[in-house]
Image (cartoon, rainbow, N blue to C red; front, side):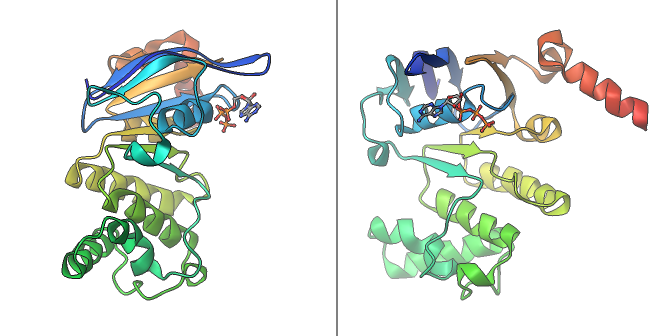
Length: 239
Ligand SMILES: Nc1ncnc2c1ncn2[C@@H]1O[C@H](COP(=O)(O)OP(=O)(O)OP(=O)(O)O)[C@@H](O)[C@H]1O
């Protein structure tokens, strides 16, 4: 398995927020994670990304124990809804940033970033500063910046939450296309049931600090604990 999370526990004071987190994920797969507000999803992502230290447990990435590895050394990118672009850099330079840090030759950077801009349907926007881009365009630049450096694991925390329905759908399609093209392994936290089913190769449901990962989507839908069937029945009843 590419990612293995073993018995991870995290409390804040008296509050046990992540309780015995146990799951694994194969390379190039996306695990969607649903769950009510406050159930511990962000804490889980930040623990895997190294931004929060677990009280106990182990995280292995590609066979290596990364539990004590600093976040900047994990090659994991955490992307969230209001992710900020560098305000003083245009779209091109925001995407190029990570590649420049890696000291990649200029010609190759140009090639990579232009290809990325094209994949993200951002041709013609390269020279715009973040304030000159729409919310959806900014989100696409963030996404480009996140994957251009070829991270081992992408952690997405409700990434499309602030976008209107149409833009959100386009982003979902782009995400599917790009994760396949760039061979991305990701955890995708969302509040949107349809988005979770659409984006995930597997689905997890978090409840009160416990994550349950379903073998296939049908098992997830049929589990009365998730309340998904009720939601489907409700919407079905309206159509
Ligand atoms: N740094 C912190 N210090 C203390 N408590 C925290 C901290 N971070 C999170 N918590 C608490 O942990 C619980 C889980 O928070 P978390 O952000 O992981 O939930 P979530 O499932 O991502 O919620 P949402 O869907 O609303 O983003 C909450 O009760 C929150 O108040």
